[in-house]
Length: 143
Image (cartoon, rainbow, N blue to C red; front, top):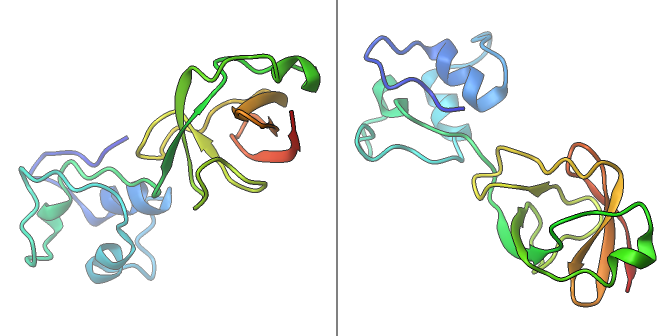
């Protein structure tokens, strides 16, 4: 989701996007700017201005790394190793492919976790991992 582009923007709109809660308790415009690690809409944001209206169209996400993985998961860990790497996905780790504890996303902004369904997915030519419904990668093993 993105912050509204309306001129009637409120701090609670920005808090909802950044923190997942519209509560402004303990939050100021300055803390929102500090915690804003997403994408500002250049149509509205003025570099250095630090105003509430800079947040129009802002999308909060996490830094991600793209990688190729299988299109489908499988409950059988051995079967998934035969799958092709034909889908681009994104993860929040620093390595080329996900490692244990990374979250896999369907979008580069890191706003939509992959629902892995607690199945195994091929994550590179040599490995698979178990991905839960929230996109969390665990149980990495060699193919």
